[in-house]
Amino acid sequence: MTRTLKSLLVGTALLALAACQPATAPDPAPATPVTAPVSPGTAAMYAARPDGDLTVPAIPPSLLTEDKARQIVPYWTDHLVGTIIVDPYATRLYHVRADNTAMRYSVGVGAAGYGFTGEAHTPYQRDWPRWTPTDNMLAENPDHYGPSADGVEGGLENPMGARALYIHNSGGDTYYRIHGTPDPQSIGTASSAGCIRLFNQDIIHLAENTRSMAKVVVLSQAQSGMGTRPPGTAPAPVASTATYDTSDITGSTP
Image 1: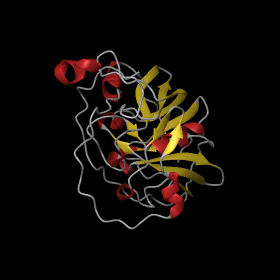
Image 2: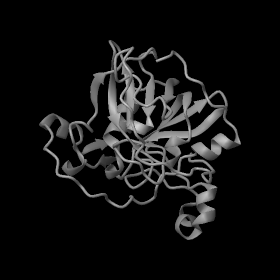
Image 3: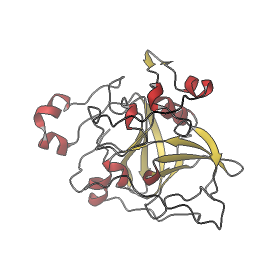
Image 4: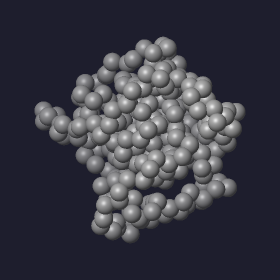
């Protein structure tokens, strides 16, 4: 992998593409395949846990697999330790560690999650952040989103989940977010809305281990799979699970 990727200039087009639109209700549940039970250690990672005045619910066992659980994996990159690399098309996020390894997380990708590629940084994060519907959402569905026009306080039902990392580049806020979700069934899938979602247990873990101004790299579809094989080895092709028309996504999510 090269040391740098081309950053996108932020302007009206970028804001239109990259603004997060977390869903206010879970997407329809897909058919749940029969999966093998996870190890006690994995189950413990995704058990209910207190977080301030709230208790994060456990992830249902039917939604967990060992492959989906966060874990340290081999990862080859020239990016510095602490860099967050998002691979939307593989529904993975990598937090770079030393010795050619990374902590790998499974993610759910909303329409806005495909709207930005390149390099940026995360200057700040929020615990249990507020969510505000975009102007476009209000215009298209005022009956549904109107009651939330002034914003929704953070909490267990808030679409942004337990934490949010806010992504900026040289042009300012990209309106790209890495955040939790109250809808754990969306992890590992393409969803109708939102940016990059993690299990609440995982976004808390990532936020706890991410320093301010950490570098964030979002891979394009052509770059998907980079870092997962040793240098000189072509990554396995990754097919996108869905494509979206993001041309009508406007506004922002604080």
